[in-house]
Figure (tube, rainbow, N blue to C red):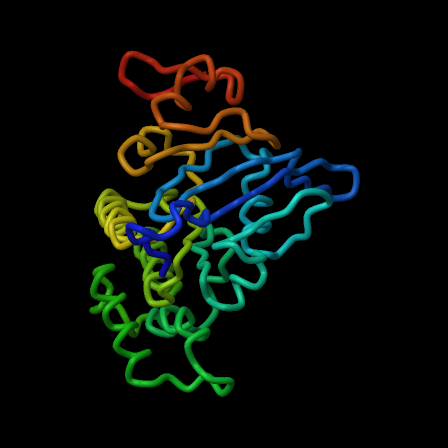
Amino acid sequence: MSRPTPAGEEDTVTAAIEVDGATVRYGDVLALDDVHLSVAPGRVCGLLGMNGSGKSTLFKAVLGLVTTDHGRVRVLGMKSAAARRKGLVGYVPQSEQVDWAFPVRVRDVVMMGRYGHMGRRRRPRPADREAVEHALARTDLTLLADRQIGALSGGQRKRAFVARAIAQDADVLLLDEPFAGVDKRSEATITALLLELRRAGHTLLVSTHDLAQVPVLCDEAVLLQNRVIAHGPPEKVLEPDVLLEAFGIHPNEEGTWTR
């Protein structure tokens, strides 16, 4: 895991996520337009934007799953695809991206996070099993470990993939809508876990439509509309004029947002 530079050594710290002028096109569709973003180690950055704003493409670029037409993306100072192969970056997907009918147990899903630590034959060692049990306990899923993943509730499923990321022990974690469709218990559990991961030095990029959750969880936020509209402290990014530019919404008297 990336740690702060000791006193007396070089003051500059390599960014956990560095996006430098990234442009991505899908045919005639401009998904990312000259995106610049730097997230320091040990920070939680909220990724905000409407559907179609390029959030998923940015995730893919950080994971090394798409090639930029212009610009570059680095994770912990290395090419994003190399960081992914080394297991330094983990991903918690949206529920819509998962085949819940696949006959796999919760424990098996969490064990997938350990694949990068195993040999070519993918045989779990005692350290792998210990990491999985620890991750299951932290996400309150121990009693559900042998249940088929599709038999879980929405919140439990999301916690299972957070557990997979914890077992992986990646320095950088990308979470795609971790609070979508979850119950209050799972929301509280996931929030507490993410804050624990930040305290342990992990860097988190969290895509969310839950704007009320951003000041609670995030050190900073970036508002994306195929380009970066705003990046900074949550209270600045969530200012009415900024939200109006991106979403066409404004805060109401209850502190939530309406169009």
